[in-house]
Length: 419
Image (cartoon, rainbow, N blue to C red):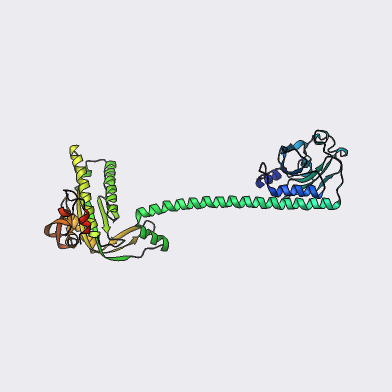
């Protein structure tokens, strides 16, 4: 048979695709429309079906039709002719209509005799399919029945449109959910990067207010570390090896600082700066810093024993510690840096510079905070650049009664109970 197609066939097929109706499961709304059409017109069968490029696919059916009937080839589909009409196709006797008298649906097994179908037309004018009633004998419909069928076809399109909008909404909600998940994941990455730069409380303040209020801390402990003879040491090393080894040392220092509640501030070349009691004030910052310094000294000593066996030069650290007031805040707009300022910081750097490789030097201001728990050794007054004479001590170890090891590096329970 000759296949007739609507003038707007490409657009019609695209519109049908957008409704995502083909090959979907039965839905009670369409089933009820087919049943109502059959009952109003007093016909034994009714269909809601859609016509794609090659077939008529049945979404809902009512009445005396085979249970396994789901589609019909388009070339013999009477509904395919109905969608070209843009109006009701009413055929009281298919055998007497020359358009359909030779159709296999009429002459073959189904023996159709009556057909009345109304196109399901979108607002854009695309006929997607039909609401049709059929009979196996000729019949007439009243004007009222045909009008009722028209109204039912419009309700079918309303139902179909609502279904499409619901699908679009669900798709939009899914896309919004995915976008939200991506945003959450990106925010988590951003937060992790920010926390690599700033303390958590400072990062939270920056996100909340887009700025950080500078703060004065009346007591904090600053630790300054660098490697003695670094320039001479690196002259014999490949640049990549220098960076790799510095990274290994500073990564270990980061872990040690975190365990002892110190905040790493920055590295400058081979120098490393951190502070205790900032940005979260506490009363044990000097003690925490002393424990941190001992652990760093133990770590580097262990590494140097291994390097000595390999006949490699040692990485000797100098450590300087000072306690006093500081001002802390964030500088920069595009590349944030959390930093501290004040005479306490300057003295810590000078104490470190005036120190001895492999030892921990502490300023006189730190000594009262730690002397009850740690063994120290007075150095006396030491000339410090731009500061004059500064009284210093060496920090040697934890006192034996407060240490859980013979070297005085690890505190015991009494250490923390000591008033």
